[in-house]
Amino acid sequence: MKLLEKLAVGYLIGTGLLTLQMFFYSLFNIRFNLWVIALPWAVVLGLSLSNLRLKSRLNEFKREFILGFEGPWEWLLFGAIGLKVLYVFYEALIKPVVGWDALWNFSLRAKIFYFLGGIPFDRANPYFLGGGMKQYPLHLPLLETFTYILQGGWNDCLMKIIFPLYFLSMLMIFYCALRREQSRLTALFFTFLLSTLPLLVYHATIEYADFVVGAYFLAAVVYLYQFIKTKDLKFLLLSAVIAALSAWVKDEGQIFYFICFFLLLTAVKFNWKYLAAYLMPFIVLLGPWIVFKQIFGLSLGNEPTLSAAGLVSGFTFHPETIVKMLEKMFLSGNWHLLFGLWVLVIIFYYKKIFTTEKKYIFWSTALAISFFSFLYVFTYNWTMVFSGIILNRNFLTLVPQVLLLCGLVYKEDNKDVGNADRPPAGARSAKGKKARK
Amino acid sequence: MSDLLAEFFQVEPLLPRTVNNITGPTLDGNPVNIIIYLLVGLFIAGYAYYLWIKGRLLWEKVGRAGLLALLLFWILLEVRQSFSYLTYFNQDQDIFGGRTLAQKRAELPPPGFYWFVKFTEERVSKTVPVAVRSNLDQFTTMIWNYYTAPLNLTSEANAELIIGLNVPPIKGAGEFARNFWVAKR
Figure 1 (tube, rainbow over the protein chains, first blue to last red):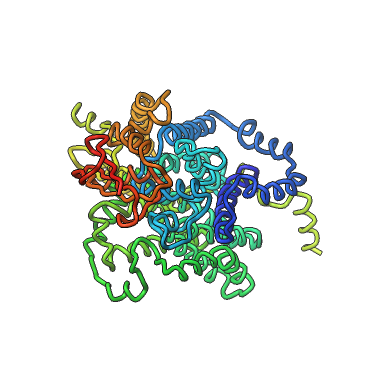
Figure 2: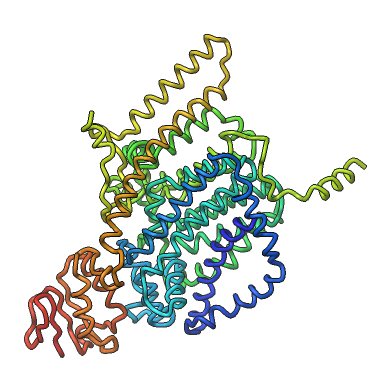
């Protein structure tokens, strides 16, 4: 993995573990304080500094992005992506919290945690679990709280830096995933396309969780795909940790985790070692939160009375929703031409998709769409599609994978393909000699 | 023609509902994607027919040409969207640029409401048990809650102070502003 990718993945995993740490602190009644929170990370950072090789990492970055550029198109695309990133940072940081769900849920809870110095667990307290949607996972509110602790004050403009950073991380992971198999130009082009999706760009400037969970889902799928290709356990663990953390951002993340788990199951065919390795991070990282929710009687998702039995008893069929969903995907949801591109890619490159590991990327998206389709076609939630409240926001969680698949099959250049995860040439030849013997 | 161009380049205002949907460009009231898909479909069919006549029909070649056509339209849509970003940038620079945090908050809807929040906040201690009666709309109440939290909220029976927001004052209430009063129990 390159420096760029490590930084992006580090942001996703680091913020997730940081907020879990804050959750555990509150469970043990330890008040939030910068030094108490930062101390374990300072130790980790200190230990990893010796292995940082900063100079060679920076040189590697220069070779990829500055010295390595060939021709004006690569510069142009890099510039266009850079401009969009700057725009997202500007729009996020210039205004305070504006989103409806942030005002009554995410950012309200963050403010309360900050001023109370922890999470109130007393049911009698009107700010029990910070108020808002008590059953929602605490990642985003706690991360916002951490930025207030870092600032030493309540500045909800500066706090919003976390969202552009997620956007940047998403672009970096997306680029590196493509770069492993494509030329720099193709990888840059599709990363540019990802940075053009209007709703994604808008969400990167406000305080909602949908695109954040999308960043985690993308990374989980990317590393699962990488594991299936290389059988390198490092990627399996990365995918497992990131998928588990996605459920700490939003409840949909649990579905995304099980989609990844199901894909792994089909790929490794009941190899218990791999399956156990994938389950472990979910149990360790998410187990306490799930047990906590059970103890406090908190439901899943938006609906306080939601249960599996309730879903079955409330089963309805609304085929008209399918037409509405297609209309939003292809025409009015303003995904530019993303889903049209997806359909063309599936039609014209189906062999490249379904006879290779790329099919797992396809199925990750298809299963996520199936999940949302089930919710909106077969349950009482169908009205939300017609009122325009949801769906596009749901699709923020899966559009990067749609584009990733298109980018991976679009054009397979043989020249200048990224080789970040290949062993060094010497090691390869030694391995080859051994094999020949 | 100029009307159609103006419609295509029309900037969609950023509203609370933008979070759920950005409608995207239209032509004559219909999503422009309909026309693009139609054109790309015709192009693919025409190109496939041309290659077939020449006896060189290759499925992937047709696909790549179709994708290129679609991507060109995508870039056109992005150019149009970039004008919107430029507009948003200018608008936000005018509204928020060079302002203090409080001034920025006051610019958010409903305009100026943050000054009212500050007014109420200065008159209510965070530690005193308070109850709130509100007749403000849901969004405005939400903003008030966000900016004043955490208050020491309790039921009216246990409250030392009762805060009234946009409701008729109760007996003995000290009025501080038209839409706000505080009463001591």
